[in-house]
Amino acid sequence: MTAVGIDAMEIWTGKLKLDLAETFAAEKGEDPEKYTKGLGLFASSFPDAHEDIVTMGANAAHRLMERKGLTPADIGRIDVATESAFDNSKPVSTYIAGCLEQVYEEDFHHANKGERKFACIAGTQSLDDAYNWIRAGRNRGRSALVVATDTALYARGDPGEATQGAGAVAMLVTEDPDLVELSTEQGYGSADETDFLKPNQQFPSVDGKRSMQVYLARMREALEDFESVAGDTHPDDFAFIPYHTPFPGMVRKAGLLGYRHMIRCTEVEDELADEIGRQPREEEFDDREAYEEAIRGYMDDLKSTDQYREWYAEVVEPTLSISREVGNWYTGSVHIARAAALQYAAEEDRDVTGDRLLVGSYGSGAQAEIHAETIQEGWREEVDALNVDEQIRNRYDISFEEYEQVHDRHNHDKSIELAAFTEPDGEFVFAGRGAMDERTYDYVE
Ligand code: CAA
Image 1 (cartoon, rainbow, N blue to C red):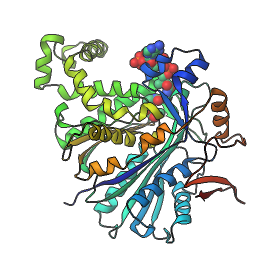
Image 2 (image 1 turned 120 degrees about the vertical axis):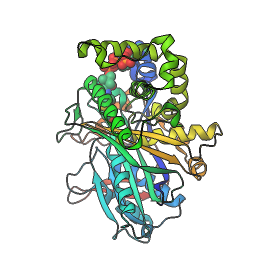
Image 3 (image 1 turned 45 degrees about the vertical axis):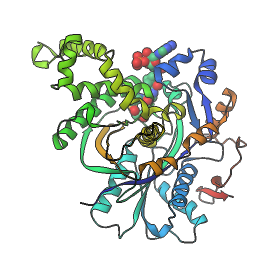
């Protein structure tokens, strides 16, 4: 069977930076370590006054098409994943295609366009749609463009405010990909939950603490489902495990849960038994509460063992380097985690061709999906082409007063004029509103 997967990707960060320790914590009168150590975040990316989900998505897609030498005729579908859409009918992919048509002679009139919504998991679902379309043989030799783009803003004063972020990831899905092949095997953990939602409102209603429990429960369910088709997983099976990363502290919890699950009934559990005992088994307890307390005790001990700490440092920690500088990108978050891991492998000069990733995506509401990916021969060239670190360094560092203006500027209920902090250079910008209140865009040379 021909391999299908991600051939190339490009990342576009919002051009502003809010420093959480220096600027945000200081203003809130909080200990900066709550952010840097507790949540694991140093900064958030924000969209400049001329940026939004369309410009960020179109700019990432444009870079991708230019680098790969593509024209619109090479693209058979454009799927945009977002939970920040501003239109309940016209999909963001049409706006992005409209932007790209300003800079290419051809058009996308024969490309299927859509918009995927299921909170943060929609980016992975769009990859899925592209994969299935190619596997079904309906692509006529063309590739799919998948764009995950979000402005993850929370209401001012919401506990989620510290985890905001803005950016886009564009991915090209093809046969014989250069970056990663996606596994056919997948696992799902899905349930009707009300942990985080936006009932026709821009900023989410969030039950923060519950959302973390739901994330872990669905992720665990998805791993069990994945194992039911792919066989048991073992910590040594995967070079890296990129998770959906609302903030790195969440992944710390998911990593520990995943490790406990994977070592159960293995030689690793046996090796650790002298130090911390064996994992509690439910049948050994009279009630669920006692069992859960014993599990919590075991997890506390497990996270201090050398085996776990070394595994986490090698397999999970490298996935967090971009996220800790940009915050939550919702649909793009798990995809920047993959990119961060591969960048780390390149920096360490590791040859990871043929190695596998276990990718854990999650969307509130709630659903987790787990699949495996195999790193392809062309990975190094693809990763070396990314300029995300440079983009992160070049962001304009906003003061708290500027942050308040930027938040208002992107608040759909306000209409605030604000001069851009950065100079657009070879990119799409928001140009205003048209006769039917549609958003309009220009390309600035
Ligand atoms: N030094 C070191 N650590 C500190 C500290 C300090 N001075 N002060 C606090 N901490 C630690 C806390 O112990 C805590 O860590 P643990 O959970 O490991 O104990 C961490 O910092 C955060 O502190 P709080 O729990 O007090 O923070 P909070 O209540 O203000 O907010 C939150 C945390 C509820 C997650 C909030 O950020 C939030 O609502 N976020 C949005 C929802 C979210 O991201 N949920 C994640 C799962 S849902 C999902 O993944 C979908 C999605 O993208 C939204």
